[in-house]
Length: 304
Length: 280
Ligand SMILES: Nc1ncnc2c1ncn2[C@@H]1O[C@H](COP(=O)(O)OP(=O)(O)O)[C@@H](O)[C@H]1O
Ligand SMILES: [Mg+2]
Picture 1: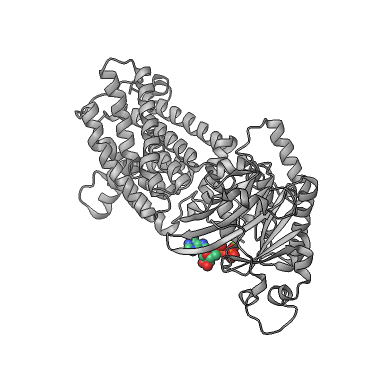
Picture 2 (picture 1 turned 30 degrees about the vertical axis):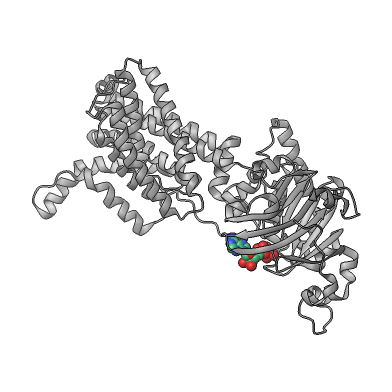
């Protein structure tokens, strides 16, 4: 039981990091209807920018600030030079544009900041929390807990921002009906630029956490692929969905990794490993069959 | 200059306020929809823009509010002036700040936002304090008490009438001088339409908001409007005081279905064809 709890908790904590990446997708998808394939590349770019600046001698805080600047500029430039030209085009054209964008980043970023894998030290160590280890005999990583806390603060802030501020309301309005938003004088371009800026910031936080944990390397772009099942389970348009989806994926993949092999072995014989790699996708597939809009996906409200 | 000539030939009713001069609109670079429309909305009046489905009413309103570009439409000739300034190059955002706002056909409330949130988005272009916002909200609730009782409901789950009220209320939050109101009666029960037109008249008289009102519901619109234009096939075929239009035999025949002789179109009625106000 104690072991089960330990697996569950570390699964949930790592799930929070999936949520972060998924959140970047949701923000852009909600506000502009664009499925941003480049979100994973943006995570990579952000992490590279931080280590790149640190290698040039900047302290961590400055590197983070610079990276934030880069991500914001990047987001605004994307809106201005790529997406604005494609307004009124079918969604598939926008999607293709973001694929192009992903390759562009994946090619350019290593040229600027170097391509060899590097460690990123953000000052949080990946070791068990002693109090929990001594008190309950469970191994819970300090890093996981800190990462989860950072993600939780970020998500709460964003949720409050969306719910209660003028810009947040405008963002939701644009997401609902951009023509109507235009008609009451909401400047869509500002809103889109803000959304890309926020998505860039989320990518920065995700990139730093993932980079610190697994090293800053090209494989970071694949975190985007893990976000996909998260989105399918949580729903593409829901911020809470991204969070809960991430938690479900994180917890279930860890539990499956530990407990499924034994089960499957007794049922089919043979050896089963690497379940973590594919389990989320199978789970997502199951969700697609049962609940295609996801747990929190906004129901389409038909207008009277 | 031609514009000067236009001014001297202005409609005698009142000072120039919203003036549309001979505009031509083309969609997708090929589809000619408005073929030289001119009209005036004097300050403080309700002007009805009438005509059958497809006549070009919505296109005219969108040409004024500059929402056409988002639909790949272009004003290729003519001009739009508001209070003496050309406004046809302004973005909708700038135009709303100058006091002209459109309430789109089909209401277009933000379905997932509550009614109150919908109203609040209407104030986006204004920089006002929290207290000012509250006051503006209360004013809208004063005219539309129904919105207040349902303020916490998502707009997507409210009735058509409530959505229409929400759309008008949302526009009011921008503190407009001039509202371009497109087909407010569409799909609503007669007594709701009556209620909404009553409020429009109220807003016009007490808040001094001018209206350009596009309607297929000719009879209803003419009962509340001061002046009317009838569009057909992208041209103004007739104009006049609401009272005169209402009693006009041909209007009765074509749009009110009140008599029956054989004519099919205003095009056949030569003397109604308006001479162009000025040649552009
Ligand atoms: N986005 C568009 N692209 C092409 N044609 C359009 C577009 N919008 C309207 N039209 C055409 O313009 C004409 C006038 O339409 P509209 O202004 O909506 O008329 P109304 O509001 O009077 O019903 C119609 O024939 C319609 O088919
Ligand atoms: Mg119309």
